[in-house]
Image 1 (cartoon, rainbow, N blue to C red):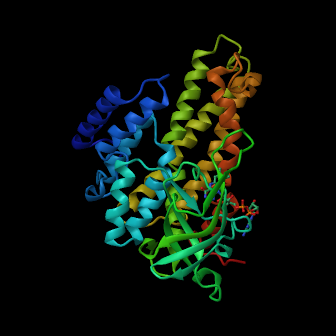
Image 2: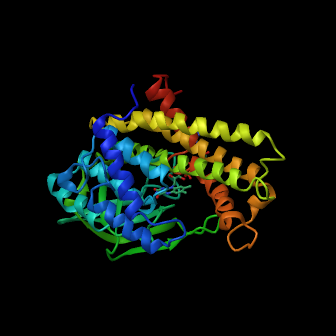
Image 3: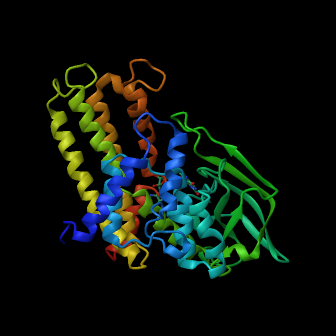
Length: 385
Ligand SMILES: Cc1cc2nc3c(=O)[nH]c(=O)nc-3n(C[C@H](O)[C@H](O)[C@H](O)COP(=O)(O)OP(=O)(O)OC[C@H]3O[C@@H](n4cnc5c(N)ncnc54)[C@H](O)[C@@H]3O)c2cc1C
């Protein structure tokens, strides 16, 4: 594969880097500037670069997406991580399984309004064994009525829409008795209760449904076939989690930090020569992750849904995320443990928080054991037991 830019790609790279230089917020600017930046990205369709232009995307070919991602990473342009469920999971699932009416209703608004979406899949008794969900939906006239609860629902406290699965036939085999819905989070009967994570973050929630009505037209795919729609969402989720540009940004930041702080006590580069090897390994691994991500993006551009390929990417990048976090700690030494609020915390405690939050990377979106199972069975063709 020739990874050098063609003339057209080089031209596009110039356009992207110029746009980032002119429009992206500079280091130290606040979230308000980032919001304005996301709107500018959305206006160009670059917030959903592979979506068809008719739904507000940019319809970029795979090479131009690589260029866009690379430039965003190299120039440290902020990424809209809080929009990932709409842009990276719900939207692509609607593109794959939705009706034309659903595409027209939901896709342009994900991009134009920058709505936050959430994903109601996991339940207190159903995580890895997702097909065992108990939340149910019963048909009543033009609506379905939902009762039950979800847990670990990231962004539910801010979300405008939820993609969710509910049991619609209690007597059918578990994979064949559930349906997939897009639910308005303002619907009466929804209660959202935040959960604080071990790092003090308030990302995820419990969500309770008490006779919540969702119009039948908001069912995505066929009745009782929601499992197959949900697995498409999970494949897209694993592809999105595996977005390697953020990892590249982190490793670049770490190398810069090591160089800049070589004379003060916050970088152990001088006293611990092994750090050089670690940084070299992390850079090499980020490049490998990039190759896995190229494969996934190439498949998505062909209209295919990556499956075990997405699991490989998710598994590799989530474990890499944890190795990068360990390298932070080895480089920063005792200073790495200082959190936000400490006057001695390098980079305002960013590295300490990233170390704590990296723990969840191998759980969210399906655990590493589940990804290895998918790779073994669907990728390598090995029997299940
Ligand atoms: C940061 C974060 C954000 C999240 N956001 C969301 C969200 O927005 N929406 C949502 O629906 N969910 C979300 N989740 C939930 C996540 O999908 C589940 O935590 C995950 O699927 C694991 O399920 P569980 O927690 O019930 O663990 P369990 O399924 O109970 O697993 C416990 C342990 O057993 C292992 N195990 C289970 N089954 C097998 C098996 N068959 N083979 C081998 N090992 C196995 C697991 O690997 C794990 O180590 C989030 C989780 C995290 C950490």
